[in-house]
Image (cartoon, rainbow, N blue to C red):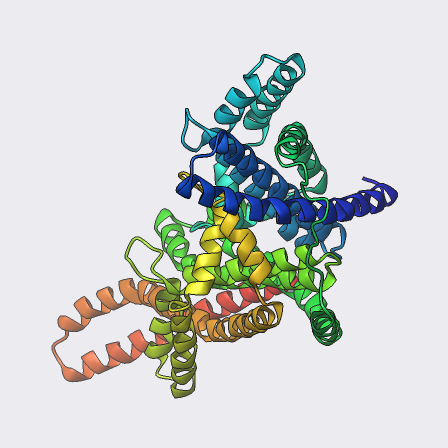
Length: 494
């Protein structure tokens, strides 16, 4: 896409945000009224009205989310930042498709709408039904991907999968992906709008939507001036560290390295590299959250700003879960495995105090139900019969950017503190592995001398052999340490 085309598309998406926010604000209130009417009185066609309203709200929110994340990409400065915005498009499109075409199958929302549109057998409506069915079939074949959706929002236990997914994202591919989705969204938006505006003629003509007030404008401007430049350098730095961490993680997978290792040695190193997991996750989380914060600071539209604030909440919740809650087969958290256990083993009082302080903060996230509820509303557009987007839009309107951005900055600082703690932990694991390698290296020498010393007849002979063994052992270990240092220096020069 040329710069001119991107500028034009960015403007169109901004205008789309404004119009669709107006529509969803009106129908969000109308559908809540309709739910209450269905509970308390008998009104003809209320079920049909609710079906169309639910689909229309689903369509409108999906368009708003697409516009927000694409504009986040267009306005980003760095490759990692662009991809971290674009990765959410897969989540949005998959949730939309599931909500409309899969959940409660065969009695899906789309099946209900098909039945409504088929009444009277109008040629133009039958044509729209056919158009949506063909577009949905194409989208399912080419782009529907639950795995990509899960990685985009929940990350993955296999951090290599998360990293590769991020590296594979491209603006051009996502543009094709969303074009395929728009082939479903556009006819649905048209037919739902026509139906609802004929049933409710006043429609959204006089709807007023929220705008950023003077207090929020001053807050966002002040925060932009204070941290935008700093987050810019951090995004570059953390993206570089993430790449370096992944290169280190895959060092033993390189053919030249793998060929030099025995099967047993490769297996041990494969297990050892697991201690890099938390460091990789922390850098990824920092980038994801930093990108969302910068997205809020740059956003021009109020609802675009609010959606980024909701996204901040979700990243914090998912990040806290991945760090602090049990994730592994042995029912231990990454925090316990790769921070708390090694720090306590090193007997560093200063680091132990820091572990205790951080653990107290992490534990507090487990009691924060607001973060948890917003995450649940955001991560599933529809759960069973319930359209979660109704609650999400209420969250989006009510959420306070000032308190949420404060929470985001605190979490970014917390990630930095854990990253600093991670370094002595890696050194601890490396030292333990080094000691084990030394032991394996000198074990044959110890076996030989133990047998020879056992056959000695005098104490003097035994002492001479022990001295000889220790000298040979020192030579072997000195050469081993020299080889390790040379290898480190070679890696630093690569």
